[in-house]
Amino acid sequence: MAATDPTASTESEVGRSALRKIAWRLVPFLGLLYFVNYLDRTNIGFAKLTMSADLGLTETMFGLAAGLFFIGYLAVEVPSNMALHRFGARRWIARIMVTWGICAVALGFVQGPGSLYAVRVLLGIAEAGFFPGVMLYLTWWLPRAQRVRLIGAFLVAIPVSSALGAPVSAAVIQYADGLFGLEGWRLMFILEGVPAVLLGVACWWYLTDRPSQARWLTAAERDWVTTQIEREQVDAGPARISSPLRALTNGRVLGLGLVYFGIVYGLYALSFFLPTVVAGLSERFGTHYSLLETGAIVAVPFAVGAVAMVLWSRHSDATGERTWHLALPAALGGVTIPVALYLDSPFAVMATITLTAVGVFCALPVFWYLPPLVLTGAGAAVGIALINSLGNASGFVAPYLTGWLNDTTGNQRAGLWFVGLAMLAAAAGALLLARSATRTEHRRAATEAARAHEAV
Image 1: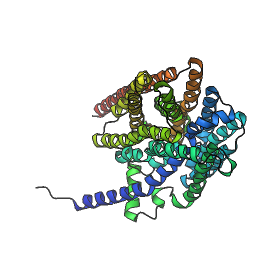
Image 2: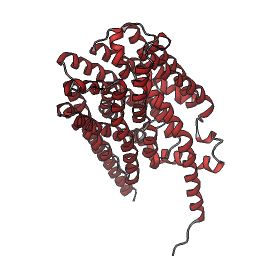
Image 3: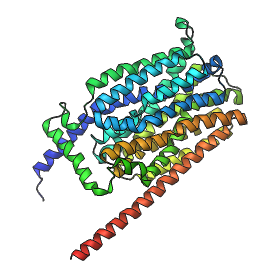
Image 4: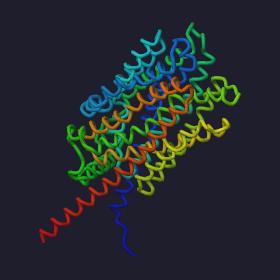
């Protein structure tokens, strides 16, 4: 029987202890930040139920207001992530949260379409860099083998923010209407914007930029995490992109951005228009839902999606498989959402939309495993921001195109067909990128083998 190496056993225990501390210190806090972030970005979908009448918005005008957020967001995304890489996550994420919280509160004081459009653009500028910054930040702390599971735990903030935020937002709009002389949707924007400012101040004191600076880890744990991350960077060799300029022009980076576009197209279609779809069930099936009941129904797909996301990301880490764990859920979302509004009962419609939500949320954490395989250093800061920018361009296209199609056709079916096509394209793109990466790896291995043979 082989003897157990006590040194390896000790290192293994140090690593497990370090990962536990990192997971419990960073993931819940960052998840809370993202919960508030995503709620402030998408709560306009609930405000629409009464805000549109107060401000005189058509479906197209609402879609434009929802999408204009991403104009400012996309314009500032790359430079914001470069600033985070230079100044550190603690300072930059704190700055982002305070400024976006102020803009989120300002939405409660808009007076018409023009001011609504302007504040949505400012909100996007203020928030730019938060999500790709957190994704970059997590690569500084999490070894690759545990990354999907812990990123999944962070990203669960998206469905949870909708599952909890939907009924809370609806309750504020319905029951706080008239308080302090303000409409309910105005109070909702104000109450949901203030936490971002408070959490931004907390970031300054709570976050640590790098593992080597973490006083809440022991010296051995700091060394273990730093060594693991550095070893993975060395093992990747020259294949990964460290140049910001190359990151902006690399075909695989652009391909990842287009795959992410399709996934996020489905996410924003659900976030911005699901309250409208649920409200529309009343007309189709002769039912009636209050604002609070609408919020509770909207919460169901997001709650189921949250559970599925955690289980699917754990399964991906356990098996080590990534490509099909990304392509299959994206395809599920693409197939299910277009047929939802052709079904003949409210239960069938919501069950199908729930499957769409499961597809969207299971694809997200697996996708974010892929960019660090291509990018490193300053190239990662720029490349991750570019991928996120390309993906979030769908945040402008999806609400505007869906709203325009709703106005033009008089129903919501055409818009959902576009959502399905975008998600199916993302699934196909993931498979093509994986096939291309496999061919590249085979060529590299053949070249290395030939060089080794010549050397002999």
